[in-house]
Structures are given as C-alpha cells and as structure tokens.
Amino acid sequence: MEKKIEQLLGQERRICITGHVHPDGDCVGSCLGLRSYLLTLDPALTVDVFLEPSPASFSILAGFEKIRMYQEEDGDYDLCFVLDAGERGRLGANASCLEHAGRIICIDHHRTQRAFVEEQIVRPEASATCELLFDMMDEEKISLETAECLYLGIAHDTGVFRHSNVTRHTMEAAGALIGKGVRHSKIVNDTFFAKSYLQNQLLGRALVESIVFCEGQCIVSMVSLKTMDFYRAAHEDLEGIVDQLRLTRGVEVAIFISETEFQVYKVSLRSNEKVDVSRVAEYFGGGGHLRAAGCTMTGTFYDVVNNLSEQIAPQLGM
Ligand SMILES: [Mn+2]
Image 1 (cartoon, protein in one colour):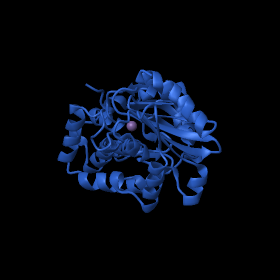
Image 2: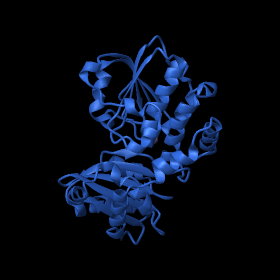
Image 3: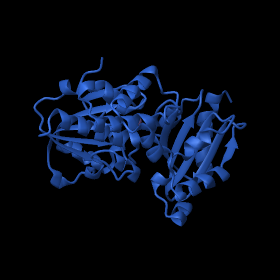
Image 4: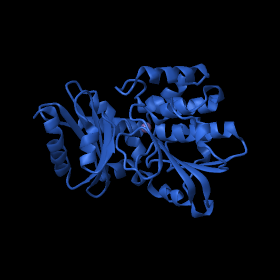
C-alpha cells in the first residue's frame, strides 16, 4: 500500500508543485491533479503550480490557466512537490523554487533517478506518475476535476493504454476514474489524437525522410532547425512522431531527433520488445523508461546516428 498524501502532509500551508521541462500529459496531469486534490482536502491552502508553457489542448483540465513559471517574487513555500522528474536538471528554470521550499517531496515513475531530494517516492512499475498519485489518494476524496487530470496523465503515458507499461492495476485505476464520470473519450481525442495541420505536415515530412538501419530493426528521422523555422514550429508540434515511427513493421527501435540549437539535438527513443532504451539514453546523459527514453546529443546528424547505433546494436545481438 502506498503512503497516502494526507500522511505526507504536516502543518504546511503554502505548497508549490513543479515538474519537468517540455511538460507532457502526465506531467501536467499529475501537477494539476495533485493541486486539485490538495484543495479538496483543504480549500484554504495555497497551492501554486510552476511549469513551462504546455500544449493548449491541456486547458481542458481544471487549474490549467493558473500554471506559470516560478518568479523570485513568489517567495517561500513550506512544501514543494516535484512530480514526474527524477533529477534536478529536468526542472529547467523552475528548479529555483526548490531553494525556497522548507521541504521537498519527489513523486515519480522514471527508472533513471539522480537523487536530489531526501523524500522520494519512486515506482518505475507505475505506468504514469498519475497512476502512482491515484494510489496515494483516498478514492472517496477524488473529485471529478482531479479524476480528469489523472486520467489524462495515464492515457498519455500509456499511449492510450497501448504500451507495455500498462498493467491490470493501470486499467483498474483508469476504471475507477471513469467511474467518477471523466470525459474519457473527449480527453483522448482532444488532447492525444487530434493534430493541427502543422503537426500533420511535420509528421508527414518526418516519415518521408526517415531512414532504416541495423537491417531494418532501427528507424531514424530528424527535423532540423531550418525546417522548424520554415514551419514556425514549436517543440510540442513534434509530439507523437517517434510513436508513429515505432509502428513501422519489423522495427525494434525508433529514434526521432529534433535540432534545438545548431548541432544540438533532442533525441527521443522508443523500443518494442527487446531493447532497453533507458540504458542507451543514460549512456548519453539522459534517461527514461525501458521502452521510452530521451537524451540530448551534439555533432552532425551522422555522428549522432553512428553513436546511437554503436550503443543499440549490441542489444540487438549485432
Ligand atoms: Mn510520466
């Protein structure tokens, strides 16, 4: 049994919540879900959520409009929750709120952990931080608003219940949340499957330009800074491309590379059955999960692919 949120709390009145850079569904869902739950426990609490700007489709969740970046003027907090991030470096500019917190609790499900706080609740077997948070909440006290946040997070981190991280417990948690009346169909359609015209154009381009290697077991595609500028695209417009690459028949590892600065790349890795991509990502200073991980790499596109290939091939028995 997971320790309950109520048991973690002392006399704290001013609480802040933060999560990783480039917030995804699980990050936003867990931060807003915990905020909503804490306010249900005690509406007089101050609960602020500090995150980088996140996809506008998440505005379906209660409290989305209150999300902002931490500023020095925000002052001190009694308690800070760090969600869905296993290391300080993943917090970006919002890491500065840790210096202003009396106590810090990290709740996460990433395999890669570089301990940075004393109180850590880490469950790599949980499909999503939202699933772990569900276990830490008293089901009776989960409001519809809280439930929608948690459902969105679980749906996103499981690729809408398709990935290998889904367990019986994941479905039981999702079932309980549906029992609360969440708009499950609207949540997955509007926030996961729907794509803008621009997103579809970038996806199409990435698919056309993809290359297979390691005898067809790996697929890679890249979007350069030049392309990003041409389309005036943002980082979030590339969401989901790596998952489409992964669906290529015969492919074990999918790699999607986006250039963030000249010859600096954000690398996303996915695998199907054999390769532990968190090990590959960790080798290059990143991290993540067994079948989904990421890291930052530098050099030319060919350097990056060669270096990745050297780390992946042995795991494919090559
Ligand atoms: Mn997550």
